[in-house]
Length: 312
Image (cartoon, rainbow, N blue to C red; front, side, top):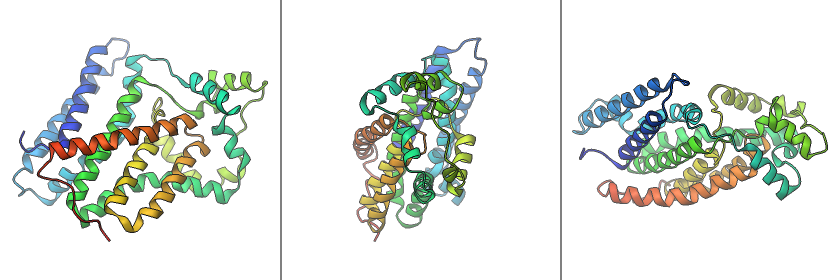
């Protein structure tokens, strides 16, 4: 276990925590719980084997690559399973409470009205491109750091994963699906009508839905999205986490990254993926977990440390 880093302890801790939760909530009504336990125990074993296999520093390049990047390969699986585990927890979704809160604050639903007020394709495509940039931040920055500054890569992946895991754990107990419910045959759609005099939310303007980035993001969302995983917005929390690392290690892109991260925060509401409160919660999540993650990284991985020089 001496070869374990902060990222390994954090990932194994997340796997154990979720496995114990699944085991404690198991029931005959949801027959998939043994498969969740098997998946988590298998992942724990594979991670431990990978750490041991690369401890000497003489492993193959593929194993060394996996050693640095394996948490990123787990994000999608962890994200998708939150919906299944939330079903075991059984907490009713909290969307109606957030919808009423936003009605009290704004007098309307920003996640519906924003797009309708500004349906120009140049704006919608800019915002959907910013939304898509999330995936470049999560995968592209680590690849660049891997080539240029491996110590910074370890710091980046460790803290980013810590923030992801914090979001995922929240999703297990705080189920929020988001404004998508306004456009389904759902109680939330009926609630919208009750709040606004029987008027139902308008669909997507043709100018917006015709854009290529809209189509790309819609495909990604339909393929990989998990229900009940909107509060806090992991898009916002993780994008701001990657922004912190740009200011620390990738200074030539820090201003561009700042602009794109801002547009991404706006796009989550414009694209009808999140309520405004989800974005605020995502900002607060990053503000809390990034410093905590840095503190833990410095104490658990003192020999690794942080990269001393930014990439210019």
